[in-house]
Length: 412
Ligand SMILES: Nc1nc2c(c(=O)[nH]1)N[C@H]1C(S)=C(S)[C@@H](COP(=O)(O)O)O[C@H]1N2
Ligand SMILES: [Mo]
Image (cartoon, rainbow, N blue to C red):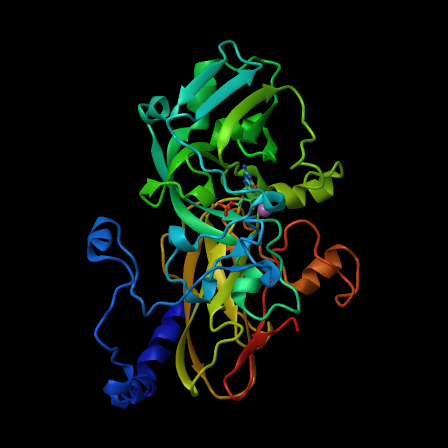
């Protein structure tokens, strides 16, 4: 209903849009024309494996500006440039990366890599990559998000507030198929998945989830996984917090209780109320344009654009507020809404040149609505100023548009 109204408004305000376009068109073309192109790679290399235009500048940055790799060659969490994103797929080159305690990104020879499934199974199994690739596989679009993806008042850009999430098409073998091959024993109730690095990434995952929709992946966006994403094998645990998506996967042990691994310590809490807030992500959304650090050149028409996702399933609805949460209108979904995947939304907006606060909030297929910071404070019975977000932070992100068109973090 509201989208129909918006569309009529869009047409009625066509003049404003046309004016905007005219302004762009009369800017001297010469100022924007690059000199003769000099690709940074040899043409043979470019033909073999492509590269983006040298005029494109979106890059990942590390959390808190910490150099990554540092002078010891250690790598740390790096953030995806969501402000420059379109659609729902994060290019593999820009996918956020989380690396535990600065461990090296392992340089694994796929011919030597093995996955072992053992523990409470009738037939312990070992797979090479070639073994796995002979099995039936599926491709699914899912997001990954780190528990560390939490906004605070010091963050300037959406890359800093929300850049620890990305979304890709993952290809791999359903874990349930491998577990059925191995023959899970009746008393089993959990699995422990382990990575191959020196500092092992290992997470405990409920068997019910393992049998439901987890994938043992080797493909990402139509090619082999990138080393930073777990080459040559990673576990995809759709909708669960990032730490469960074990990279460099080499071992799955079937067990009969929850194991407090190095990773799980501090992530799963014995208090079920807190634990419920950590396993599964969202629902969560954020406006990527306009967002912190960007500049609106003039009043007039803009298409507000953003991403919404939920660990509980597909996104059903996204609403946008342009008045700091006093009124909300339905946004339009601009991509398919896949379960546990980023979903793109758009919203027509005519900026009148006055100070405005933009927000988005989403509802997932279970009907759960993304909370505001005030909602979170109320839940914990705290004053909004003193409340801190526990578990995953899926609270609403405000962006403040100043009358000069500059955009700032509304939490500041
Ligand atoms: N083996 C291994 N798996 C791992 C990690 C790791 O350091 N080692 N980091 C985890 C964390 S904390 C997150 S948030 C996700 C990040 O996945 P990405 O680097 O592909 O974005 O991987 C998880 N899996
Ligand atoms: Mo993480």
